[in-house]
Length: 85
Image (cartoon, rainbow, N blue to C red; front, side):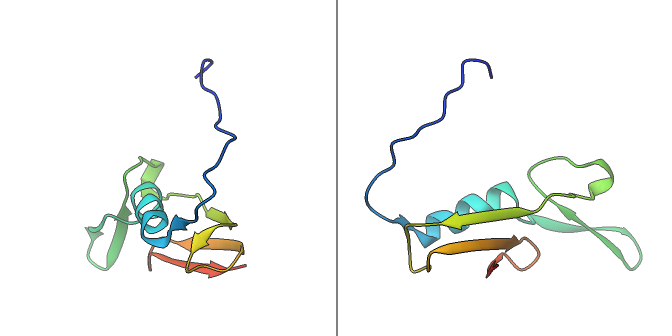
């Protein structure tokens, strides 16, 4: 981690919306649901969470994504959807 560096030169072309969807789905999205007990479902994701609570929210600041207006969006993992904030 100490050797990690951020990339600050971005490509001039827009990112494809399908690529953004893939990144969000695999990083924050619900992969499947598990029945914890009758009537109680827990989301299973690619990252662990104590009690499967996943108390994280993902926001996306969009500048150049093809088919998506500039702005700030909140990602809703249950619906795999972006909602403009």
